[in-house]
Amino acid sequence: MSLQVEFLGMKLKTPFLVGSGPWLSQGSEAQNIVKGLSPYWGGIVTKSYIHPTGKHPYITPHLWTTKEFRGRAMQNSGPPCTQLTDEELRGIEVSCKAAHDEGLVLIASIMGKTEDEWKLMSRQLENAGCDAIELNLSCPSTLDSHKGKGRNIGQIPEQVYDIIRIVKSATTLPVIPKLTPIVNDIGEIAASCESAGADAITAINTVTGIIGIDVETGIPYSSDKDGRAYVSGISGGAIRPIGLRCVSDIYKRTDLPIFGVGGIQDWKNVVEYIMVGAPAVQVCTGFMLKGFNIGKRMANGLTKFMERKGYESVYDFCGVAHKHLTTTYKELTVYAVVDEEKCNGCAQCVPACCESQHIALSLENKKANVNTERCRGCGLCAVVCKQEAISFVSR
Image (cartoon, rainbow, N blue to C red; front, side, top):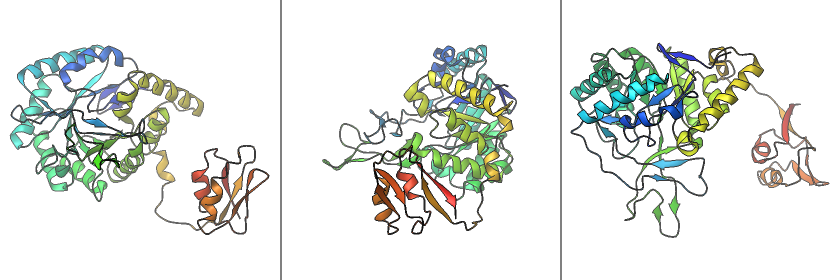
């Protein structure tokens, strides 16, 4: 049994990479952390590079959350993308060597504005020793998503196609577009990537949103100290259902390998992404919140899972969820059953059911009781049950 994955010829020690994001403001700084990543990680994706003539303002703070979402989601608007200066290129060369010495791959993320910028940065980063180029076609920040950049490009199949062709003409490295979930049909975008010659796809980037509003002041929490608020990307566990759906759609529409991204917090989340079709994943917010050791915990958990299930490699269960995913509905009639040993009598299921017109649940002898004649099998009671005491059987 092995956690190793071969992805576009890159040999990954484990299927986990640290994804592009605020954790690393400059790719040249990666040299300082590679020893902490080995042996539980497969590699690193840098913060996105821009041409030296580009400039983004530095917002502080640029990471926000709320009491409700703490540990589950956050919003970010920075730090700004790194200018690919000569000094930075010298630093990324050192980082590439340091990563390779530890058996890690280093993928460079880039975001250009013109054909020349895309080409130049691709060539420079190939010469610096990077293993692949990830194209940031999906940054949701208002600073990056104006015409010709970020999310706006990733929403237009023709522009996605053109940029991939441009970069493919400039480098021999694998080219991996990173896609936004903010589209009508991500499968269509992915098909355009494949037609253009992309080698793989990364999905997804963060989801545009506002983390919350301070109701006492009316100011969104995603604001600076002057009260100027920003619309930008939401990340963390809250976006994982969106990421799983997007990876599933891409898997069905293309033959390209996929890096699954979005809301990965433990080994089970890794397995979920593998099962919808991504043989490798990228972890950013989880890494930022939990540090190096999340890689160790994911590796240990995934190893035990695979040994228990008898899997020799991640490819043994990559995509297995698809045989269960269907767009055809089959009418089944079920009713709820309560496991009295698990039920603690909290009665949260009772108003959920009785105030939703079914009136099929009551509390008897401090346990939830189901009127099977009235139960419609909708599932709401199981949704609210924190004890996981409710299941369903066929009539």
